[in-house]
Image 1 (cartoon, rainbow, N blue to C red):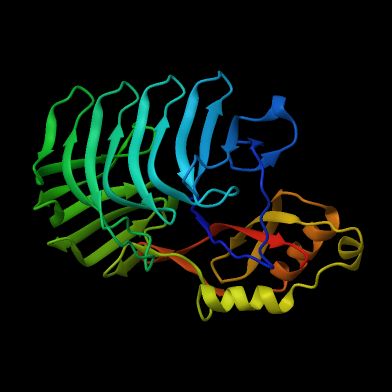
Image 2 (cartoon, rainbow, N blue to C red):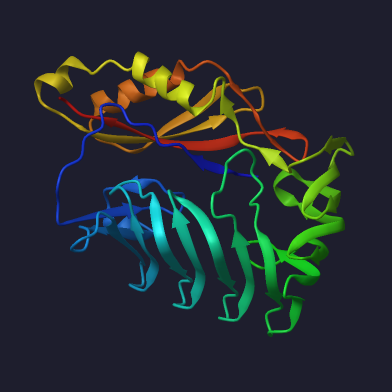
Length: 318
């Protein structure tokens, strides 16, 4: 299972004015300078009059819209307010509201044929203590419009992102999971059985393809964490990064975006530059991240897992 978490850490934060910026990206989120090799395009326009939010529009290669939203920063986006995503066919995929990059309030998800899949409600002040989405399920339907859940009551059936397989089934009461739930997590090659009470995970058991059993309570999983938390990681970056002399002398500034893997034992591996500024800044960002102490590994259903992270590191001269 490939999980992607994004952390935003800024080193000597700097921003500059612009009217429009265009980025070319691959499906894995990696930036490319070759428009012909890009899977989609992200266009960042300056805020509307009276607003401080940048306008973000993404397009598929066929020219149809992929995403429309607003962001507090130009790159990478931290979404605010309403966002709409679309399938490549042009049909609506998701309609959600955001605060500081996290979904809040009502969210509507659609099948590729345009039929509403489900309406869910996120907390107005989301946390990030676990990987659980933490939403209530208000309504859900099959692809022909037959309701599984109505007004927060019913037998729910959850699907994979491509809607080709069922991932979980169970009872919904007052919008929350209740009773016994069963399902399959193909990412960790496991089946699972869980018991809920009013949305609280009382106990869960997962069994992998080696017939190993793992128990968990409270949450289906937790993201990897730097010892001391995100604030400690930010301090580590700030104390460790040395602005390269060549970049300083030639006034080279910009934001380097890296991805890396937190292994099952907490080691940092597979560091990649997905958005380059200049080789000297790229190398410094990679150097410091590569020397990071071990993290606390992430877990899914009681099992330690490899997790992909992404961080932007901004270099700017004062």
